[in-house]
Image (cartoon, rainbow, N blue to C red; front, side):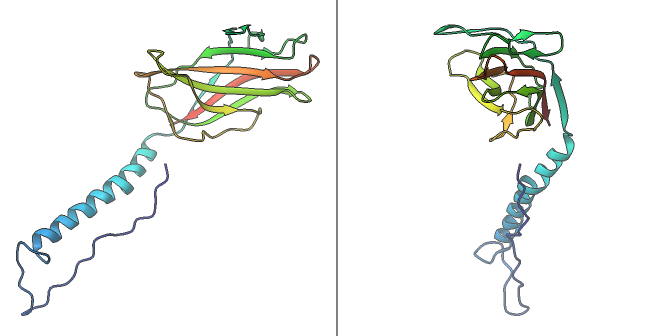
Length: 196
């Protein structure tokens, strides 16, 4: 969240003795000035102080997952799956692609800050994509990609704020490699979410 520098909006105009009559109403009345002060304090609280308190109150946390991927089908049929090991997945040596997904449970209200994928990719042209998706729990709307990492070892920031809402959505991770050579080595060791 971007917090902009504070710029006061209220400036008191002094009354002059024996010239100005202090009154309750009107353009120069005390009621109007006090309402302007109220607006100033409200803006200061909502736009400056409360966002800072919110950021300070929620330290960054991490959730690191070992991929445990399930194969899936599309309209064209079953997609080539990953070789599943105890602590990682690997593209089978006889295939040019590998596809899989897994459920992800992040805390309700968490704001995803980064996605980091670790692994071992030795590929001449293969494209790795690890994407966090969300879909409403009723399945009425299309699934939406929230953040994608295309390389290992480099944390990726979401392009827009991602706030987890478990009451309305479900979340899953899709891990796929495409356009690789059969001899290419593509392994995914872990997926780490940084969130507040």
